Length: 259
Image (tube, rainbow, N blue to C red; front, side, top):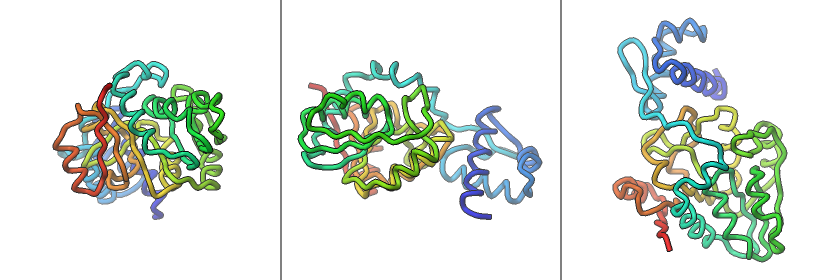
């Protein structure tokens, strides 16, 4: 079986477990038409990623990230920390660069601090990011096509992915639904996973912006390992031990402070 087919089955297994809170090997074997041995191997892999926990005869959810409200509502949550993170992340961007900014509320604060840049090109799949920079005279905004995820104002799917593959940038700046040292970076919207992975491939330098509420949680869809992060910009409320372990993995850490 190809890697893509296997990954698709893994994501579907997670969705089944997510819907009911648990699932048995026998149930999953019947549902996906594969052997009990294959299902047990799949569950071991998902457990190793930290996405679920093995239980007698099956699996249960572990440390699920709570549902997120739409991006517009999230702009006012942890606002002071997001403002500080946005300012610190924007300081990593120089005039004349080409960057990608992903969807989300924290990334919108990054965009707000880039309005005075000169000769900057910003590629984005987020309508709220494009709007933030629409009147910035020194910034050229490139918006991908794609299917709109209305709650996030983001453009996802194969059209977005195809256009993203045509572009190379100096830096990628994204937020992430949930970050776990064991489970990696995860998202809760399965159709967006391949778009996220395409975004990450756009540049060697990956800047992740995430406030303290994103850590130690796991969403249903695996995106990438935390080791893929070049620079993490977070706030001083994030667990110091977590940050120390990330530094040990080679991730540069920037802790933003409120003004």
